[in-house]
Length: 362
Image 1 (cartoon, rainbow, N blue to C red):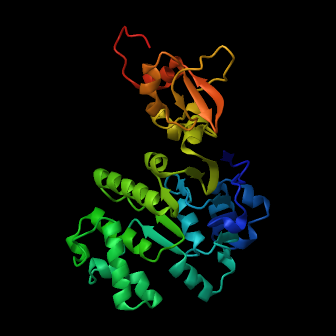
Image 2 (tube, rainbow, N blue to C red):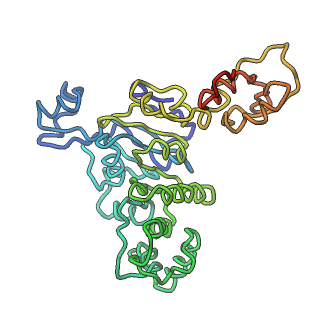
């Protein structure tokens, strides 16, 4: 797990294998922004920096790496810097300092031609506002990026038809955007992003304007597509439940800085500070924590019988089998017994979330 005191990823991949690497990234808005970094002003809280210099630190010394096929979620409240960060990744906003490396291309030193090539061929973005072309049918909206690349009409339409099925829009190829619901329009936006087969997908709060049920469907759609396609994704959201549902790892931001980077269970089980602890206080812990958070060390007197599970099994998923057995759960990773989970350990997490009738003992 990573906090503001340690923002170096522990992934074993070398940098040339990483789809995305961000190192010491800054974006400061205001006069003389480039003169702030390296001075005492850079260490000031955001409000004080603005008062003394007229500058605002949108992104402040952010570093992280994203592994191949990972869904990396960046979350925080409004004004935390998450949308500024994602726009810096493809230089839609030019960073003040730092490095962004996408597939061995250092974005901030790219020529205009190299940057266009990167945006057209390596990276696709999905925004909250769909940005569909109202005069084009679904199939041509999905194929638009391929058209920009110069692909012929027949070839790009054939590719777009494949993507229409992939994102669940069969039968709507020749509909226009205003004939579609909000969720279907976002499927078109998702299809357009996927059509070019990018190595990196960037999502900037794509579902925040959708109704709750449609939003849940679209979250499930992202999970399904990730399972099928194994794309590397950076997903921006202000919704913790969405972050926990989608993210392999979560980066939490506040005032442009990293507060914590960790897996969902690390963020819930070991919050870096009170800010993260408040964020996660309403989360059903049994739905997020894994057995590694509730297991104890094994000892010679433990039974060799009982259910066998891995340490990354979610507590809620393990509860039924664990409580139905006369023996504790044996936690085994890579053929080695690493822990024991007793009924009491399960109940402390699960029952704490339930409304227990008066007089009932856990």
